[in-house]
Image (tube, rainbow, N blue to C red; front, top):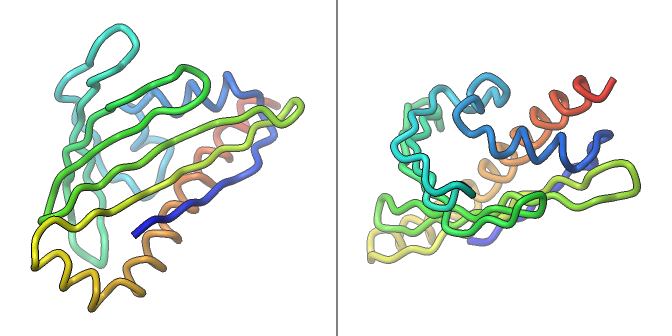
Length: 151
């Protein structure tokens, strides 16, 4: 299941990027995140940065362990998580748009087990719609903070 969302942000790339890589404080900015627990700070560029992210999804609290697998400053970082028989890969990215920024997120869920494949087949449409909505809301929350810092 591949998903992609983006937002236009009235703030410079550097401002938006700093919000993205301040993972430790994301729960203060993104309403969909209940709690962040840093497990490993990774190297000086944040490669290997690992954290537990708790959200409430479908009325239930869910915690996923995620880590940065690739990072290019002021451009993008990729993350990976493995849970419920699936691999979850995502990319948070920024791109200059004049004095503003295009902020984007891509997500790919790759089922590994029969159960995960079956659940994807049965619930795929509903899950895709809910995930897309949550991803868009996360970006809107980041946009609001970045734009308030820019004024």
